[in-house]
Amino acid sequence: MTWPTTAISTANLDSGGDNPSLARVQILAAVQDINSVAAEFGNVAVSNVANLQILQYNGTASQWQNGFLALHRYTERLYNHTVTTGNVTVDYDNGNVQRIQATGNVNISFANFPPVGTATLIFDHNGANRTATFPATGRFQSATANLTVGTATIDVVVITTYDAGSTCLISVARNFAAQ
Image (cartoon, rainbow, N blue to C red; front, side, top):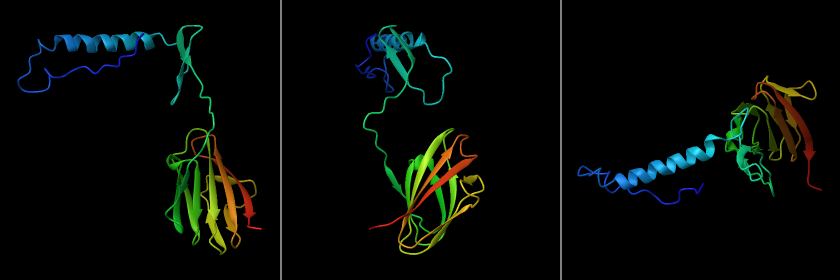
């Protein structure tokens, strides 16, 4: 298959004075392009299709099949929360590394977590003791549902879910401080 790379003209199809008979060549070319793509992907060897699945072409088998994503030089972007006191929503759609520069106590909630995923929160406490309260779906490695942090330190909180955020397993690395 050759992937279509030429745009089809709509000059005879886009105004009140159209002449569809003059557009017959362009219509035929568009239909042939669609049929070519359908033929290429119509015989894809894919089973158990999942959301965000990647297709990979297997040259040995001359077919498309379930693929995997090989990450090379993987990087993440940092999302900085604008709300630094009160209610803070950790929205996975903002990325999985998020920073909260707490100027007061915060109440954390979760949104848009994937079926399985991990988010990292970086708490910067702005020189004073702060408390971060997590929702009941959060399960800490200890029995506490709150994070009380020390003066002028940074804490890293890793949140892992395996059921789209219904249960969030929370681990904390505390008191990163300047030397």
